[in-house]
Picture (tube, rainbow, N blue to C red):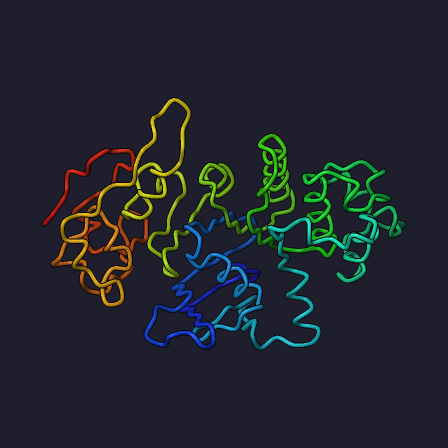
Length: 333
């Protein structure tokens, strides 16, 4: 197996000055991202997605566990090794407006990334200007964009420039935080097509954070579902979103609006839900339509069912869930 992998093992993150009795901000049992893979992190706001991204980048120090790159602890990397990690694992931020220096031309920003990455990827005889033009072309920007400042181009063009700057350092992986947020639908589709093409042509590993399950289904083959900092389901994206195993995943899928389909209100919690303490039992229990007093009052563990990891002791009994059903058949007292 290739050592060019980003791996999180038994990861736990607690922020300073938070209640030690509260749940950690993130608990990630295991995550592996390798070349050519496409993996999504999904969940509602506050579920731990951004904390996971920042920890994988080495910007947040885990309280327990480790993030490793090429079998080395990211937290222990220094000097040239740390610089090599920074160039190999590149973030694409959500705030593309704030990610570029407004005083710097786009071509200059891309050239700066190329120099910082050790001037890798240049063909014999290519100078800095030629490399910049080639990268602009690769992300679908005209040569004239090199002389533009961020405010002189559209939001989609700024996002393409940020991707070009990331490519300039010669990365092996891109970690993207809502890369199409704030973009028009047609522009967003083009950005996603660009990301998929780069993954295929360059063999890049892609980790995507997104609230848009349509984007996740289109771009990522595997998905990790987070709820209150904890993985509740992990498996193949398409099968998971069509027939999820965890009630929270089903709730996320149910919340996606569809043309021609009436609004679907969240399912009512089961009669047992109010008696479940999320600090000791299932974290989703108080909101769960399938909660059961006998099994959901204890801490839930990840179990594997048909190739999917799911944190629900009832998953085997419930089977694959229908996220669009108006009333679950199982409303256990």
